[in-house]
Length: 334
Picture (tube, rainbow, N blue to C red):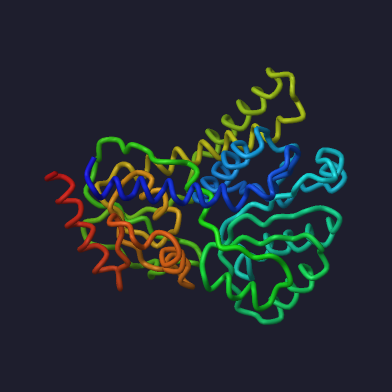
């Protein structure tokens, strides 16, 4: 094993141990994991699977209740999870006012479940409106046992300044997926660039000679089949109450495997997506990153992954593409 990959393996093991250490005080044998990412974005599914794997290692159990933001049922949750059980809110990058439906759901849960221990799994925080920060602060202030985990120092400082709760710095849960061996590459460089509101580059930009993709498109029929197979597995095991959890997990695993396959086609990557950065580390792929619309990737790298020899932060797209081409040639020659 070369020194670069050994250092990446050590980094991944260290970050996973950090996650387990932070989550351990909150682990209970009965728990809920809510706000399932029922959409095509691979990164959010990678977080969900990482969360499941971490919580299973700590508790030896599966969640007693799962839901997406649109099918939350307070009474079902209360019936499924014992009063002492922790309610875990899915992590990611939607804490703030960019993705309002998730933030509104989060605040509603915090206000409705004031008698339950709630842990917000690792998030990046970004607000553009001070009034929205104050609204979140009011919801948190009304809860006696809310813990907030954040993925970078600016999020930590904002939370400590505005929110009356325990706040801890913690890496992203997707590191619990562990190292993966990439397949034989089919191209030199793949540019994985956002096409949503957080993108770093103009949607009209196309680097000459590079494949440009995102991971927001999927075979919806394949996802439906994965969900159905997961639900069937619950029935076969005579646990129909777990059908939703099994179907969600199957869909998330399907999406994560799609993401690994997509990235594994290239010798090197260019991206402005945080989870392309994380999955590229897990695959051992060299990659150049551009920051997203509010600096999410750079902030995360400064806290956790900037030491890796597999990644550089590029000042612009031309620099990123040039570095990735050189990295691809070096990997092919190795």
